[in-house]
Length: 429
Image 1 (cartoon, rainbow, N blue to C red):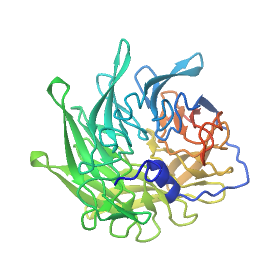
Image 2 (spheres, rainbow, N blue to C red; image 1 turned 60 degrees about the horizontal axis):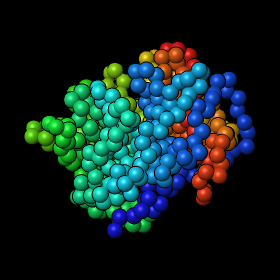
Image 3 (cartoon, rainbow, N blue to C red; image 1 turned 90 degrees about the vertical axis):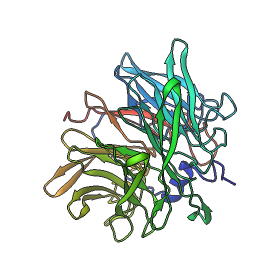
Image 4 (cartoon, rainbow, N blue to C red; image 1 turned 180 degrees about the vertical axis):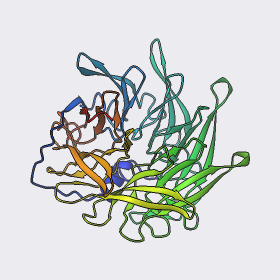
């Protein structure tokens, strides 16, 4: 029997993999920070993923809970110096067969349709891939695929989309191999999948990789990154040769076949463990990402670079979190600007213990960190797992799933429904 959301979800795994560390000092940053939406439950709750822009400057995102109780998709439109929220869709309109708990982000296609995943719901309550299409009477949701177990279960991350409109993603459970463990239990190890558009609005689905075989890792929570040649890159947070996760590449072959190549194993030393936030590529083909824990110095997570060489992929230029009021446990992915500076968030740490928004600037001696904002966990939010997005003026946008103006929104250990925020502009680069 598959576990329910509270037993096995992205939120639950974040809680298991992290340790809350509360500091007592405060930190001035000098950056302009504003909350552009404070969620109250009715308009969504617990936004876990980052935001995306359309060509008109509107922001789009998902709330993992709230709405009708099963999560929502929202739009934030700039209006007279602030933002106006519009709920585009509330999951649970047909029970939960339309999907439930969207914890991953969104992507646009060339026609302005939005695509995403829900962690649960669908025909077997194992999650869905959905499309939202704009129309004169609002947005219409279509479930493109409902997961059932052997094809995957519980997609927690967003999707990658190529020029032909093919969608790629991962599920943290399901698939062919049932030799993976989590919190004392055994489960199916997860899959990577492709959805391809066909005639008349049809879609074809195929599993392109089953995780967990031999020394392969499992729990691919970070989603996939696509390069210009059609290769896919991703991370597994658990498993592998040393049990602490790995970075992999999936290469397309003849007849729709895909081959996995393991690029880096975590856990054989002090370079970090449990990669969770996903990968980005620079113009030279180097990969950048985060590990949520371990590393030298503070042992509270790392930022890493992987460079392809003739002898394989080499890890270099790491940054280590956890010193003094630095951030701790970076579960989010990274944003890179045109000058090679990196931006991200941490789950915890900082002067208040609820995470920071940071910038890393490259130099001859490695990365120099600047804390752009120290989240307090109050009305400004806290505990962010969102990858940031940047506008043309140099301002950064993201979400935090803790805190906000509505502390009584959700009963239990989470205080507040979360926020969407704006910071900057940072230096235009």
